[in-house]
Length: 377
Image (cartoon, rainbow, N blue to C red):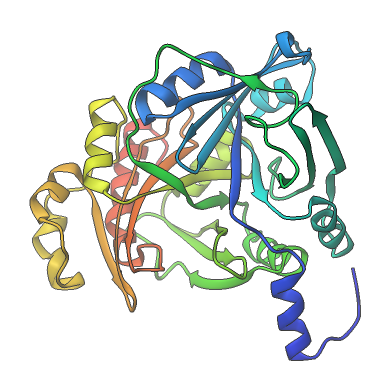
């Protein structure tokens, strides 16, 4: 890594300019059965068929189904032969997030800038071509077995990327109103939060915009610590959690045990109407963590006026919090696999830039009740 000493203004310019990000390009999950997983995300979450890669497109070791809803793209990938990276990943972790792919204008520069600052290369700049143009991608490792890919699309007009073909289906359930990735949360091991904060600062030019310690995020039984990392324009935000000492096992410890290591804990999906979205998701079978009715008895005293009627929010179990810039509405699904690992957050921001600090206690007590049912508290 460079040892050059920069002035404050130069540091600021370097931190914001060397890795300009335009948002999340896609999230790729390694799963045991991609065909069925794609059906689940279409049925339960309202995604649409977009693209497919597999033996029929010349890919011999895997099958990938791409689904999309507004600016939200998921790739579900499964191994079709044993003894490859995907099969080993699933054997160790179960279904989970492998790739957080980021949109960039220059994937070669993104790789060069991050690797020279200490990032470990996952994929050197690679150009993929077909009749629709060319796409450049590169990548680096982050916590656990998770990777960031940098995707450059300016010279590509195809359905997804070279190697994929359009996937059309007669089954196209309606959208649930999910829009884009708001943030992705990573769980890391004991005393590993600060080293990964430093990684995002040094390697990717992110800033720590919020910090929560065990006084902020604790219940009678467990605690955790968290720091929110954001790129310069705020399009990409990665909160990082680590366990903290408590009487019993925290949700982060449970995740690390069942995921067999560090990884993405949850993906937060934005909506413009959380009542309509969560109603649709519940009607399609998505299960959410249950919040006790007592939460709603005093919540408006804490957060003040909101535009929404409290009754549907309380019936659905949607949490409310406020910061200096507005308020937010949020709800968390139960884990979407049998292992208590990955789950989803649905979030609607009404000006708020924060992450629901005022909800932590109620939320984590609710999660602990789920842990206790599993015998993992």
